[in-house]
Image 1 (spheres, rainbow over the protein chains, first blue to last red):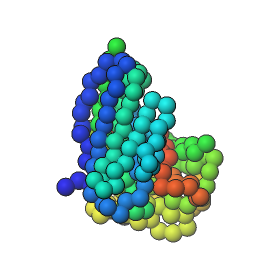
Image 2: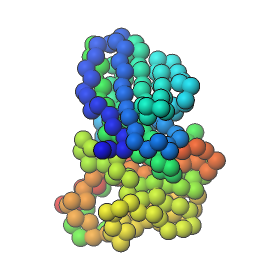
Image 3: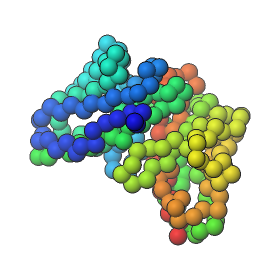
Length: 108
Length: 116
């Protein structure tokens, strides 16, 4: 079983749609969680950290369920520029473990 | 803030030669830097963790004699791919963690290595 599992997608959604990505992790000792975004042939960029109480940054909302070892990312009002691969990332404990990513394609 | 540079961005070399890649944290100090490799349509795979002033810690299956890492200062780490072969062709990305930060890492723009 992979340490961080994500649905690879692709998710093809129209502009303005709401889309949700899920992720599960296997290490119950993990304490820090992140969503990164990676564009094709580019480096990953930190999108947001994920906190236990859930957190929001503009159109992006992240949720963490420690009991289920489950992380989610919700994107509202999708833009064309949101098209990218979204990486679920978990610490273990002093390094980061990356999921394989979920590809999002937003179309006009 | 939290800008990481990487040089070169792209390199083509002949089989058997060595290539050095530099990773710099430009506006913060990083006691720890990380080197990753990413093959097409695959996730990032951690190769090694580099700590300033000490030996790097390599992940299982990564040859330390082939991938030489030096972390001489709080802002610079280098990765040297020695005796490169075509199967070493990949996207190499470094990241850095702030001295007083959390676990989040900031990534350099990556180096695309092609060995012919």
